[in-house]
Length: 265
Ligand SMILES: [Mg+2]
Ligand SMILES: [Zn+2]
Image (cartoon, rainbow, N blue to C red):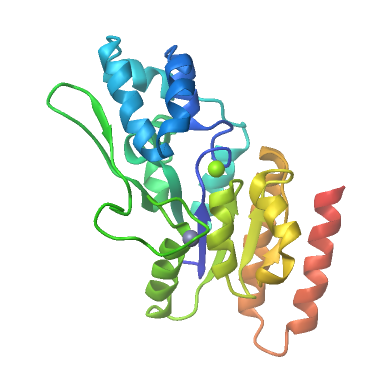
């Protein structure tokens, strides 16, 4: 077991689209989605959209079929399997929902690689309709973070994971994400952690504009080729650095410079 925890956002990080938009568009409900979008929070809108799809006669099997053909870069699944094989503890933190994520990960044959999926709960009700609930029940209490939507603060989830890791001895985190919602957790990472923002996506822009708020090493990635290459290099280097007992500070820095060069090439 390595001492590395890899935390993945899901939409536009593991898969190459937003799963909520993908289901709505593929099942022909884009117009009603666009009408409702200005009227309610995203998480409530997804629950409502599942009702709309149900009224239009779309079944849970229709949703599953659409999820099973979601676009994903061919290097992403091998990267996840390799990280798992190297003994990393893999987790998902996502503002999609449990049904979508479990359906897709099972279809890809990688569900068992993940020890934890933190996302909005969902279930199929007695009418066969998918219901999507908020991760934090914001009707009962406010999570108190101004950066994040009311239903989910990913930073709070990272703090919970960090507290759990602290009880198991020191562990280091690699976080991969693309969205604005991935910025809050990114500010919680320590200097010895690594942040992998997707280049030119909202979290990358937020990091560029607020560099002083991020303590972790930052390694941008563009596509599945980078996702695979940079993630596996980081895991190898972090493991090496753990095995070096004598003053390894300089050695470690040198290695990170090499990573930056290789990822540009
Ligand atoms: Mg995302
Ligand atoms: Zn937050």
